[in-house]
Length: 117
Image (tube, rainbow, N blue to C red; front, top):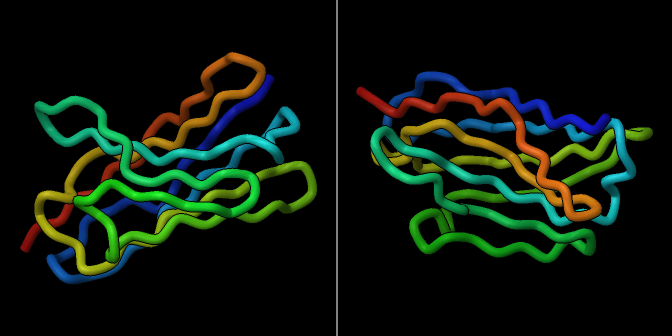
């Protein structure tokens, strides 16, 4: 069965940087579009960054210019990264990676990012 596993979250101060990683394995996810979502406390999950199989990216306006999504493949695992820069307290939340493969949604377990001084 396919699975997604995120890592890299933590507690950082405003203005700092962080890299999140997501490893997608167990299926041939090479052609899948990969998406990062964020769920802030008390709010709905929101889409923040997308990368398709060709490397084309798009971002939510709230993170455009500060966050960068990228992808790589190592053997049978697709890796998707989210580089977070100029972090703000409002970037605090649980970050999830997601993909859809053969009409089935796959989600990671989430990784917590807390931005606080």
